[in-house]
Image 1 (tube, rainbow, N blue to C red):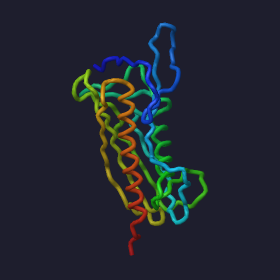
Image 2 (image 1 turned 90 degrees about the vertical axis):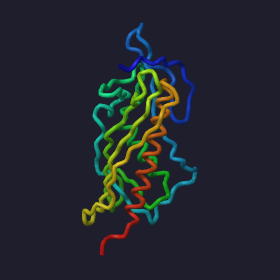
Image 3 (image 1 turned 30 degrees about the vertical axis):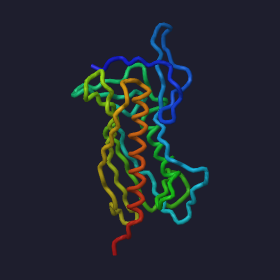
Image 4 (image 1 turned 45 degrees about the vertical axis):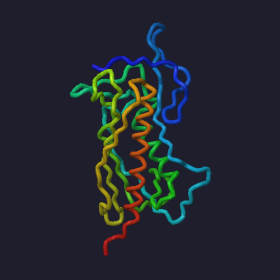
Length: 212
């Protein structure tokens, strides 16, 4: 069973930002700390040119239902639970989608992600399914957990409905300690690697020549 973590007042960090203030439902209840995973896409201040890039539209995708909300999912063998007194600032699926948009926006590669309703004629469709998004207590309930993010990516050329890239990826990061701040930071690092892989895979796919 996952223990309640002692979440003290935390300083701001670049990878996992602790918002000022906290939520309490009852006067005597323990405060709930809010976190967000904020991968750094290493964006520069200069705008990224769009000329010559190929538009890719987000073509759906599922997020693990138990992890999709604002509670932080943990696992301990066959048991699953939510991290006590800690939540994401928004639903994890929303934070992931926002981070994915930022990752493509900061990239100068050939793939340019557009959202439904955005101007532009997409040449490719990108589907990303996140099948795992959890903190795994694989070394016991008191040890620092390992963050695990698994996803499946499908990139399709819309003109002929040809799948040009389809791969499954697994990413992991060990938290430095069994505390909310460290766990959120490890989530940020795992998501950052996942986003870089998605962008790199999309760039490779859109750059591939169409069949003769």
